[in-house]
Structures are given as C-alpha cells and as structure tokens.
Length: 114
Length: 116
Image (cartoon, rainbow over all chains, first blue to last red; front, side):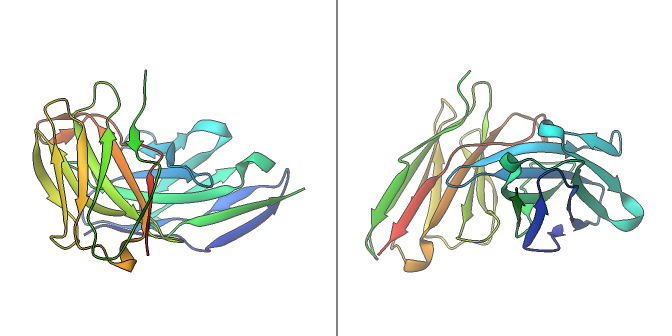
C-alpha cells in the first residue's frame, strides 16, 4: 500500500523567502507523485507531477520538486515566496500502473507574511 | 474547454436523509473518481468509475454509492446521512486506456455538504 507523510501542518515564511514543503512517500512499487494546491473554498489544482522521467520536476507558479528514491522524498520548493502562494498544499502518491487512486497526505498550510 | 464541474456548490441536510451529488468530467475524460475531504484533512478516495462500472473502492461503507452515465458524468449518493459525513466532496476526472491512466486527475471545485 502507498502512503505519504507531510512533515509540518503549518509552514510560515516571509515574502521573498525560500519555500520548502516536505513530503516522504512509501510505496512497494515505483510511484507516481503529485503536488496539489488548494485555495480556500476551492478544489485542488495540480502544481506538478513525477512520472518516472526526470527526477527534477518543474511546475506552475515557479514551484519545483525533486524525486529522491534513496530518501523516499518528494519535497516541494520555490525560491521566493509570494503572498499569493498562501494556501494548503497536498502531496499525493499513486501506482504507475492500473486505475490509480490518489493517496493524499494530510496537507501543509503555507502562511506568507509581508 | 470546460473543466470538471460539480453541483450543487453547497448543501445542507439532516441526519438520516439521503443526498445526491453530481459531477461532469473534463471534456475528453472517461474516468471519474470521488474523494471526501473532511475539515483539516487530505482527500480520501471513495470510489472510481470507468465504463459505467465501479472499478475501485476505498474504505467507505455501502451507504456511499455511485453511478456513471454513458456521457461519463457521475453521481455520488449517500444514504442515511451521519454528522460525520459533513465534508467537501471532490470529483476528479481523467482519461484511461485499458488498465492505465493516460492523464493525471483533474479536480472540480467540490460540493460542501453539511449534515445537521
């Protein structure tokens, strides 16, 4: 069975600072990994995905994530935070075969202060 | 190109009642998945429909049932509502080819269900 763990339910940064949101996964087979963002009272928007191609994945809004098999991690980063980045971020894992259900982490709320 | 749409946006029901939520997938998609997101939690997989059949099911009781129509739209039905069913219900669509998904899942805005 697959699972993801997101360390830190809340992360606070200043505008312009580095954003680092942590995600560790557990999977018995090669996984597909995703980061989604959720703004208040909205659905989920895909930020980026890892599907066994390049280990460094670039997404929308300046976010990127690196798949590290040795560390079973898929941390999300952004060099410079913007006020509009304040939202809830979810890491998710699925198998790379079959009809995949997404297994989500519990989420990390990113707070950005001026 | 319309994305995933869900209706209604909000819903208030009383314990014991039944509710039906609706989802229209993104144009070109044929697979619909439903997720329940309780307040402060990540989404939990309920079930997935493909070719009008339930293909996968998460750890949810039989009170949760669904249907997919020939036009790929889908309904989620919940019977005998409990207070704990209060949540945001998210629909996601994707495109499948046989056993594999060709595209990632695209999510709708959700239906906020409140059970009193």
